[in-house]
Length: 93
Image 1: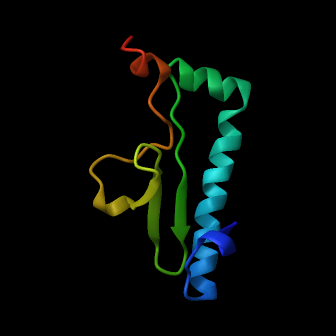
Image 2 (image 1 turned 90 degrees about the vertical axis):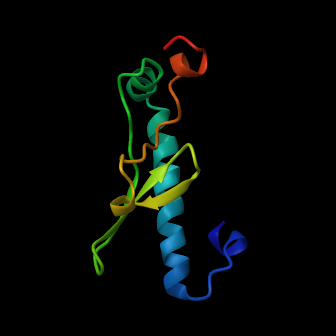
């Protein structure tokens, strides 16, 4: 999927993109677990997806609302990989 959809210029860039795609896939899997799905739906649980570069100590956090990874140091609030709660989406909060 990454090779087909990434215009990466090097193997290093390809690996970085592959890492990000893996984090997103694992978040999707995690959301299907009954207790996680229930907690998210009730607004009692948020999940986060981070990519940490050991070489540079750079951390990016996945922002589900924007659909991208943001540098953690540049954000005032930690981005959440949890979509808006159902209650919020339905106007119940």
